[in-house]
Amino acid sequence: MDVRIVVVDDDRANVELLRRMLVRAGYDSVVATDDPASGIDVCLHEPVGLLLLDLHMGGIDGYEVMSRVLAKDADLPIIVVTGDAAREVRERAIAAGAADVLVKPFEYEDLLTQVSAQLRSPV
Image (tube, rainbow, N blue to C red; front, side, top):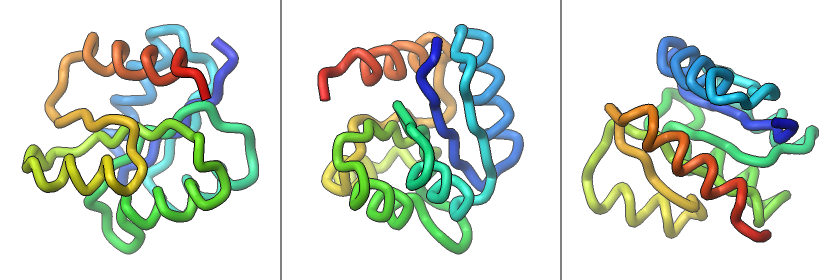
């Protein structure tokens, strides 16, 4: 599939896991990074169809990433992938512009369902 998906998580193992899951599902253009600044740069300077984003990262957190990216492309779908299951975190992420929230650990099928749903959503 031709759509570019960007994965940003400061945990390298999570980045690699998400990248492998997406490639296995047939998504050929996956940019995966453990550096939030690098993820922002890709989203601001390249065509991106979807952002998978952790919230709690050192330095630049996921909320800041969302703010910067959505300031350029308010229609970019963002799925937050977080280990924090608190209702308040989900509400804040959605209010900040996330299309959905996926709580770690998650099932492979749940990830693919959310990714597919966001990529089919009309802009």
